[in-house]
Length: 190
Image (cartoon, rainbow, N blue to C red; front, side, top):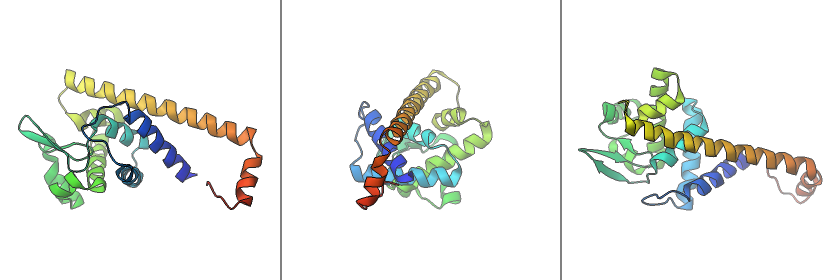
């Protein structure tokens, strides 16, 4: 069942992400690696999966991304800022990931993003505030716009999750014979 849930989540990300304008879209293989990395990191740091997916959709980076902004750079899939809170030395010390790993590795970047969220959640007690702090600590219009984007993605993910739950329930109740047929054919969807 976890495999089905992860595949459905990736389909949701593809559909929501397809309406965005990324500088470079992830390949299918990169999306699979991202899904596995998010699964690992959300379990490691006890982060709700929708939080990580919404953060990815808001940041919209890719492996190797380096976007220079006002004297600092945002790197990798989750656009880790190289100057805000001076996270890179902390990530190096705590996770043993250097800047190159954070910039180029999908898992490394996802771990760094998860670590930052974990720290910010410990500070604020709120996933929304943690994601706002992930972007910037300064309370201003830019942070408000960022959080509006995040909450929009969280809403879309929640609606898609609810639709999938309704669909799964409909299939389960209206076609009970399918599970027997699938078992007989040797197909396992669990």
